[in-house]
Every structure is written in C-alpha cells, then in structure tokens.
Image (cartoon, rainbow, N blue to C red; front, side, top):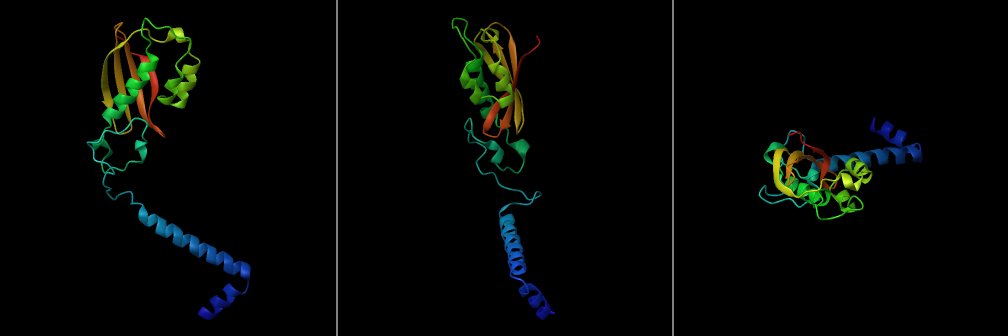
Length: 173
C-alpha cells in the first residue's frame, strides 16, 4: 500500500509539488493556530487595568478575560475632550470653517458630515462640565454641559485607530 502511494505521488512532478505544498501549508497553519487561544480559553490582559490607555491607541487588539471588567473611561473622556475643544467654539472666537483637527477624533462618517456643516452652526459656548453617561468595553456616551445651558450627547466608539466620536447631537432639556 505504501508502495502504491509512493508510485502515485512520484508519477508526476506536478502532483508531487501540489501534495508537498498542501502538506507544508497545513503544517504552517497548524503551527500558527497554536499561538492563538481558543475562544473559550481565558487570556490574561496585555496591560494592567490601572494603566491609562493613550488616546488614539488601538484598544481593539487588547485581550482581556472579561470585556466588562475593562471599561476605558479615561480614553472615552480624553477623546470627547479633544473633540469638544474643536467642535465647541468660544463665543469670542470667529471661525471660517470646521476645524480640520476634528477628523482625528471622529469616525469617517461623522467627519464627512462635519465637513459639510456651516461653521456658524457650531455651538458658541464653552464646556462647563463633562460627564460619562454610559461606558462599555467598546463604546460610551458622554454628556457635555455648555456655558449656554445646552447639553451635547456624544457617542464614542472603539475604532480601528483608537477611540473616536461617532455621533454628536443636542440633548433635549
């Protein structure tokens, strides 16, 4: 039987190369899968939970055993603050366009909309207070109370290149 298998394999150089390639590829994939944990296997965190994640850092690649145990409140607050620094215009300052720096803190969909926004429609106030309304492992809601007593609700999401604001809207009083 082994003789028949060897004869079949060596009958054609193309057959030999194809079978060799399949065996090598299967071996490489098997060895590569040893590095990844199974879905049910617990994985230790790659960073202590007390470390503050940097704004713009890709936290989606961070592995934790319980996603609910790791709520990145500091990262959500930091990206909301950076966004509001450009989005909310102080009353004494004039703007001719929506600040281009907002693109670094927003999702592409929100940025496309903001680019079309009339700069005079941006809120003219200062941020009085910032409150995390809800926070999860991959998203959060932030309320920003402005000096003109209006409130903005920001949706913050974990994005490919870090945390980004995906939506901003006035909160009904």
